[in-house]
Image (cartoon, rainbow, N blue to C red):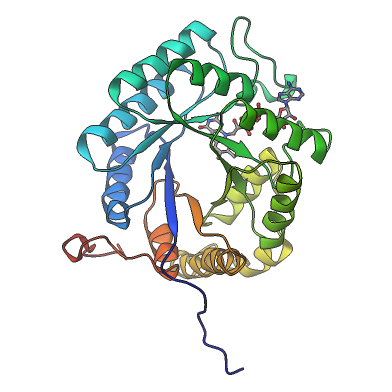
Length: 302
Ligand code: FAD
């Protein structure tokens, strides 16, 4: 009562956006439309995920190269240790260096066959920490790594998870981006643990604006993230109401960001899923406006 609806400092917020490499022409159009809408928000960087298999990987390289040549954005290329030798991965890093890519998101990746558990490729990098050290030898990249507020599913406990994050930072990582989460306290508790371990790099919360709740449940189960009961309640009955679902999704993402912001967070990484609307709306609620009036999107409701 008597408090303004919105509080907090709307000025000093940094954002970054994550995209995935498109598979089809239609997805390609969708991606570049999203990039065009989000570029005026002047993100610190935009990252492009990396998959298994040669063709997916080539799409990542192609997308990163196009971001470099066709936009003013600073692309960060995701890279994993899966299915390639050190020499092969080093050649990719060298190519990125020569192309002018200055930021790599270094990851271990997942086992191609989930039933066998992760095994390093013979002659390859062992894990993300090992990859970070390899990248450091090749160039002066900014290096981001993954962090898990709810622990990585392969970690026996939180201490092992934090040891692993510390190894990545000691090897040269300059930032960690978290797996998505929905309760602000999960992030704040994790941050306390991270700091008590002497890890002092930025821990950027990964924000997933949810559009498809059923898909979220499947995805969350595979990567060890929890989906709170209240989210199921919020999305209940909306399967055939995409517009309402979007309004609810934007509210949930904005509320999460604003609570994080109230707790002192001023950098956010958005898993855009190559869609601009929810990310744009959430950034707007955080006080972010297009860099120039001329860049104002004509229609953010398409
Ligand atoms: P690591 O940090 O190397 O390790 C993960 C876990 O493995 C550790 O917590 C630990 O339990 C265990 N471990 C590793 N090394 C050791 C060791 N020496 N001793 C004991 N235990 C060890 N996946 C993709 O395929 N492509 C992407 O583009 C991609 N982008 C991502 C972006 C973000 C921000 C996040 C959070 C995840 C992303 N992922 C991506 C998923 C990621 O590849 C998986 O979560 C993977 O299972 C772990 O990768 P990591 O880099 O966290 O691994």
